View: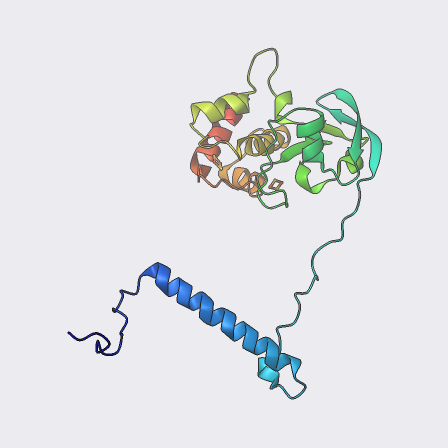
Length: 220
Ligand code: FES
Ligand code: FES
């Protein structure tokens, strides 16, 4: 073959690999962005090609530095003098300041009931109460139930009836059942279901929880 007569040089067809496709897509995208910017800069640019509006900051709360407050919490019969961020919830205070971690905090927004404690004889979601607002109230957590090494009958019944799977909901469920049995020592199934309706169990152990409540009631 004569030199200089090799004909037009053609690129050997290459397989369109994923990497090559992404590379081409990035190039096209960059070119389109540059064209759009040029068009947007001209006064008669079509409106549909104008630059995308800047992201809004609506919904992002401005940073607020912590404000601390000295409070006294009465938990499980003991007073705890604490200095807390005024935004701290009762759950956080119980877990992080009083160091009782039996109360769980899966959702932190009043939806699951795992943070249930007893306040002045009634069940409450401790994640939905500020620690500072819990001053002057009698708070009981799941740690209050065991006495001298003996589990509370409701705790023992939960174990016996296999009412615990992952355990995240368990302390809240137990506190609800304990509260129920105080006011109604012989509840029917409807009363038990009503008592635990604010306690969600993602593992679906409701049948066992109800059996545990019945068993504990029978022992009372
Ligand atoms: S952690 Fe309080 S309701 Fe879920
Ligand atoms: S045992 Fe797992 S959420 Fe209830």
